[in-house]
Image (cartoon, rainbow, N blue to C red):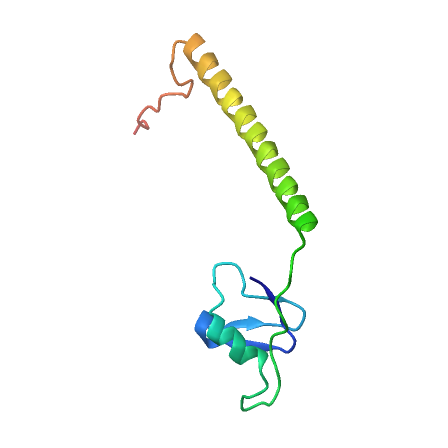
Length: 112
């Protein structure tokens, strides 16, 4: 569940993370505790202002759109990984053709 940030604040329960007006709460890697959210949505604090708005609702259509985008990104990444592994196999085949040896020069000790 996401909530809009109405006023800047530092969330002491999220490793002193700064939340700025217009961002979403909680940030990635953190979870929203319902009691904490209720407190941040109320103006019953020493500042007298609410820091969070009501929960951001995602419609079924938006959720489907998001899911499609995620699936497309995953497919794109899969293709990229396959291309990378093909290149690695080609490099390994070329090395095998050369006798599997490294073509670097051998270092000889310096003459005194």
